[in-house]
Image 1 (tube, rainbow, N blue to C red):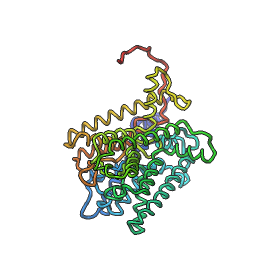
Image 2 (image 1 turned 135 degrees about the vertical axis):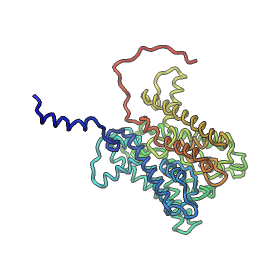
Image 3 (image 1 turned 135 degrees about the horizontal axis):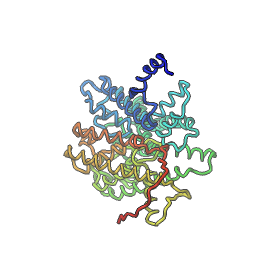
Image 4 (image 1 turned 90 degrees about the vertical axis):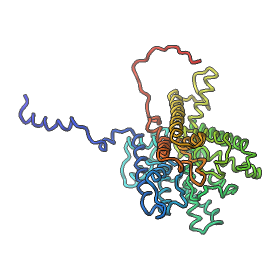
Length: 472
């Protein structure tokens, strides 16, 4: 039997169940991937505000809001497309902000938050571990915290080593302070596959310099391989593991194939082009061709004027940018593993076999489906955004396709605006916003779509009967 007091208490509970909590109190209900995406968006917003401060740019060259947003997005998404000359249009404070945003984008919001939580002594729960695993494309949750610590340690060690070697080279051209600054900037940008440079003409001045053409590509490769592969290889050398994981084997094989194949293709296409490789000695042609085969997939550094490349070379680079680097690292694109799995799937289908196998392992059907879905979505987005850009801009179609592919692949390559800036600098505000959207989707899209390692397959208690459909 209800009393009056029971009725009163019941009425007090009504507002709690009737009205939902504000969105910012529901973050614990979001998927780990969505939280990482929101963290990236927050970093871009904060970076935009900081770049709009009067100390970030010379008083005679203040940034517009759209250019500040573009630069912050390009840095956090480790892309490298620029609408303002990093060397001249930003003060040291502004350049430092860009560098910090690159580091946040490269290491990842989730990794940095985890290290902060560990520093202040907070325990890392299952949900936080899932968020980190999604952000790093980790294959499992076991040993994730030591893995995070190793990532941070290796990142700073490799960047420091790269900065030291590059600084030694730059000492020939600059005072010690400037030499170390340029060395550190290039090293951090290269390892994070960002493509930003503290030089107005990127690395064109060091086109045939052996030191720069060795250190920068090595940093790009290490950052683009992914931390899973780096740790796997390190364990082999330390004797902790006797064979590489299947993931690492696929990444290393595809990376080697794309570097060698890309270098040979670019050399073949540009060998006699007097505006790029034509006038260089053979050894320098090989050096420059290899540099761009490595950088074109995700890093964005260049030692030749990309606007002088032939149309065939530009289209080839579009393909490289579409593929990108490897999972779990600082690279963009659909990833080398996706490209490799799709290639093996096509080969398997042509041979009328059911399973996709490599290195005596079978690729799970769900992984094959996700690879196909990711590639198809990426091609769809490339088509749609290029079409949108061509509707509002008057530049040649191939140049617009190149810019969109660069943004979606977070590469940073561009045919330029006729000066030292990317083609995006000459786009309208609408065009710039389209590229901003491309960069953000290229970096965070797979997480937002739930294509990560820990998204389980929906299980149903029933299946519909099969029906034959003709496809050719």
